[in-house]
Length: 287
Ligand SMILES: C[S@@+](CC[C@H](N)C(=O)[O-])C[C@H]1O[C@@H](n2cnc3c(N)ncnc32)[C@H](O)[C@@H]1O
Image (cartoon, rainbow, N blue to C red; front, side):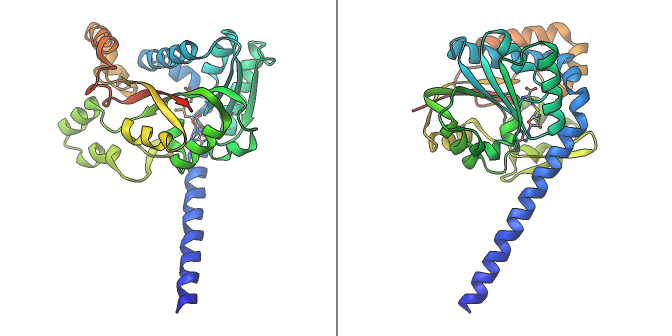
């Protein structure tokens, strides 16, 4: 009887690993498929540009120029180029080989190869990099929402950042007021509930699937505290301003959006407000 139970547990474990690996593959393929057009679509989206500006400002505000930065889920390398130009030494990693190729080309075009190393590596594979080798890690616009286990990722990141170093992460949150309003108006209750799932969910991306886990700032912080970090700051990104995918609405209402952006600038870090938003931006320090 005991032997049967052990066999069942082994089979369940194997199945869990297979499901996890398939999800990672789906996500990789989805990002491979959009890599060549990704940078242009980001650069053309003012909301995304503003979110990026904020994340980079946190990095440069916490890490002196010349510091070593690990970029987790670098995409096509916009942040890596900006950070290298600002005098940092960057190690950029991404799970999508096509994104890695885009970053390599971009860094070569900018002649910044001496300041940026690019690796085809998943966050879940960070143990392939040497421990305690970075002054900071950053992750912009949601790569940490795509890892199979946030607790494992937190531990791996914690091992790579030196004591006293920081993690700057922009993460897709659970409570996005514009999204709730949008899908409530459309009566689309299934879509409205997506961000509240307790497990990772399949999110369509240009014909592919990105397996995505959503977090409240509290859930995210607790996971990183368990890995030896403490929170330094938190602010909402996209609490009054609509999420990046509502770009056509934003373009039609440019002066309203400009006012909302100013409001978000002023109060986005206030308690009660900072826990909402399309994304949140958290800075954590390694003990
Ligand atoms: C929304 S994009 C953001 C890219 C980039 N940080 C930026 O700001 O433009 C998410 C990126 O995370 C990468 N990614 C997804 N899962 C990952 C994983 N497990 N490990 C590393 N990168 C991952 C994707 O390939 C994609 O390039």
